[in-house]
Image (cartoon, rainbow, N blue to C red; front, side, top):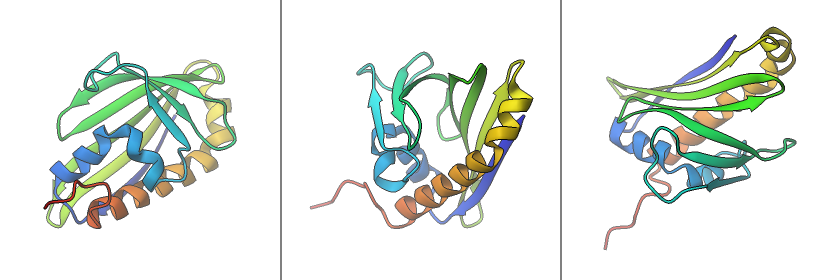
Amino acid sequence: MRIDNTIEIEAPVDRVWELTLDVESWPHHTPTMTMITRLDSSPLAVGSEVRIKQPAQRARVWTVAAVEPGKLFAWTARVMGTTMTGAHALAPSPTGTTQTLTIDIKGPLSRSVGALLRRSISKALATENRGFKEAAENHIGEPTKS
């Protein structure tokens, strides 16, 4: 089962990509994440692990599954007997960037879990997209220039 949300961001792909890779800053611009901790110190790459705490959920380790610079970031976690893959897909658009956030739910319980969580996941993806849009368009988290 796939759940997704797409938004237009009036900022270049490079800026949105920078925010995407700075996972530890996500709690500053989206209330769907309360804490994100990198479990290694190397640049995010396939196999990197990140502990994420979200409201009303226990902390969970997500493992990076794909990194295509400027295009795609994806990670996976085991959730309620399923494998969830969360992805950020970026594409240039006439006004800046089109960002699509997706959650793919796979496994024997995917239908049940998807039905149970579809509404909350859809709401979370929309909230995250709005947070990325605001951060990118308003230069939130961007280094200050002297």
